[in-house]
Structure formats: structure tokens, C-alpha cells
Length: 139
Image (cartoon, rainbow, N blue to C red; front, side, top):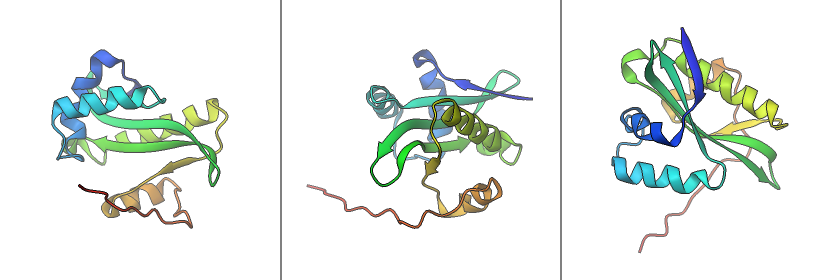
């Protein structure tokens, strides 16, 4: 049985060992700094628990853009590699989708790594016609 709920700030450090499996360049202090900073603009961490242990983490935030309107953006979805393919990612997505509906938002957007695309497609996510692009502005 998996339970999913928002993490309170005192639990954020517990999420780091899972998130680092996706964001390996982060150290714990930088992770906590970024979560704290982003939380001021609505970012939240959601945790999935099995038998009381944190086994999955999702970061999400409500966004309103001209191009996409009001929507929920999932920044990260990470399931501990030891328990993947056990319905935890699906439970986290279901939580995000229900949360979006409760906020009156009509869509969930996310960026997917190539290897995660089949999972999202099974959950009925489709490619958005506008690809994301970036330019690094290193100094």
C-alpha cells in the first residue's frame, strides 16, 4: 500500500537521497536551498510512502503562462531505484492530477527524460507541440 502526501519543510532533507538519483549534481545543502527558495513561489514536494518509508518524491508548482494558461507543472518525479515499477510513480502522478483539479487547473505539464517517456505515455501524457529550448548563459 502506497500513501502520498505533501512533505512539510522538516521532511525535505529525507527527500534528498531519492531526488539525487535523478539530480546527481546536487548536494544536500544546495537541494534544500533550492526547494526553500522555490517554495516561496508555490513549489511543493510530495512524498510517496510504503510501510512508513519515503520511496518516491514529486516536485510541483502551479503556473500560469500566456501560452499554456493555468496549469500544474511537475518539475521532478523520482522513485527510489530499488522499488521502481511498483505503482509509486503512478500514485504520485495521480496525486498531482487530483491536486491540479482541486485548484481548478485544466492540465499538468512536465519535462521527461527520454527513458521515462514510455511511463508517461502509459499514463496518457502526450507530447506538447512546442518543444522546450534553452541557452546556457555561463560566465
